[in-house]
Length: 125
Image 1 (cartoon, rainbow, N blue to C red):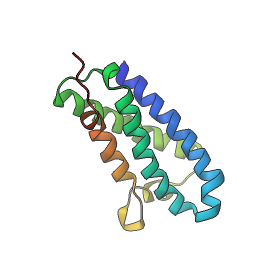
Image 2: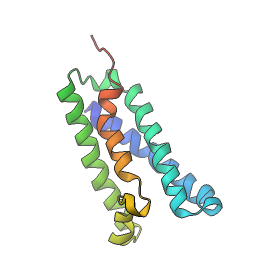
Image 3: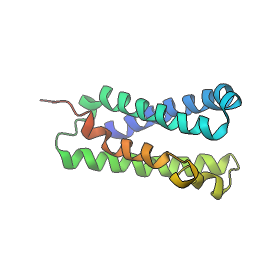
């Protein structure tokens, strides 16, 4: 339950960040650069929330931490696809964010999300 609630906080914060990015940053620096910046900012958001919620999540061992990270990644990919399709984005446009050859940094963001519970774990005892 704690891992799901932490992920929901991440998505809420990331959605707010995405709104600010699209409205204020993308018009100034371009859509792709803004998305790249958004991934880097998103990594910070994920790490901050994971660290803030570490005691609440209570993932005591490395295996548990990696399972939670994988769970977050899976939920995020489904969320991204659902939101992208709801916004009318094409599959090509959505998957371009995952392609480093085209400047997409989402794989980096997902990698950070995967290891975030391990990187931010606190002693819960």
